Each structure stands twice: as structure tokens, then as C-alpha cells.
Amino acid sequence: MVADVFSTEPLPAASALWEHPRVTVTPHNAAVTQPEDVATAFAANLARFEKGGVDALDGVFSWNDGY
Image (cartoon, rainbow, N blue to C red):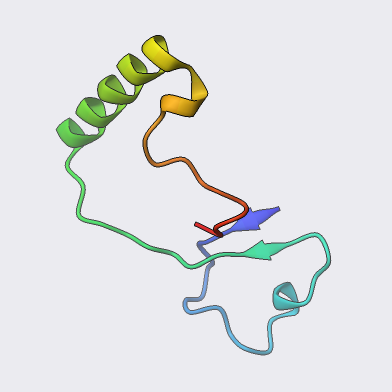
């Protein structure tokens, strides 16, 4: 499981989730987003995908880079 949002934020230092072997805790990085921006970003990524497949997508998480 990968999680970046919790019922208590920030995640308390004493939380067992920090050490759980099947959980990866990532930072919750939010941005101001308008609904119309999401549709535009999706459409742009869809066009990238149609031209070049998954490797052409923008904003893909990299396990090697950690973001």
C-alpha cells in the first residue's frame, strides 16, 4: 500500500505505518487545482499516450527517483 493522505496530518511519528513492511508513506503534495485544469491535463496526457505510449506521459511516478 502506498499512502499520502491520513486522517491525522502530519502522520504522527509514533504511527505504526512508518515501519509497516507493506506500507510506503509518501509526502502529501497538494496544489490548487480547478476542475477544468484536470480535464485539460488529462486530454494532453491522452494525446501524449496516443502518440508515444506510456513512455510519453507527463507526471509519471518514478520508483527510482522517488517522485
